[in-house]
Length: 254
Image (tube, rainbow, N blue to C red):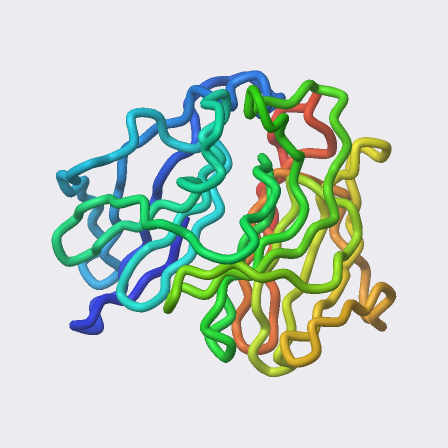
């Protein structure tokens, strides 16, 4: 779900990708994502499905999504389709409702599935971390694959990739930007050895350095992966998720 504000200041929530499968392991349905777009207008409290041009034939099951510069940006590894690193980023023009796959520059990131993705307005950049690295030839991964710790940065202004200091190995986790501290907050996920975590790691958007043991008061929510998280200026809200990929979703607490 991507929060987005158009140029006319009408607030939207955009829902893209995902799957209707009841399979609990995302890798088993990674090539069967939905390509439909649903838009919720928070002023009218109504959903609608705009007709889009040039939509990918298969959508991403776990897309990395963010809004910037009047458009929606999607990191889609195009699971199972070989040699797709150069077209892993899709751009939705919210004025004409048209998709494109712009040419990317710089050091392209390792193609991966289940990475976390967040936009940092102060840097005008998308940060992508972790995920499961995919095979260069087949663009697939096996179920025993370990999580990556790569941190890659995409500038939407010039479509150029860069990178910063690697963080913890993690997949199926979340990132969100907290304005009050100019930091990116990582929560939960798994690493291939542990079913799930409930820890917090903090990345400074100023120095691009990690803080592995920030002081946090109160009781942390249960360990989880495949959850959702969003940050306001100084608060992170976490919803849903599962303890392991063997479990059905059960947590409905924010």
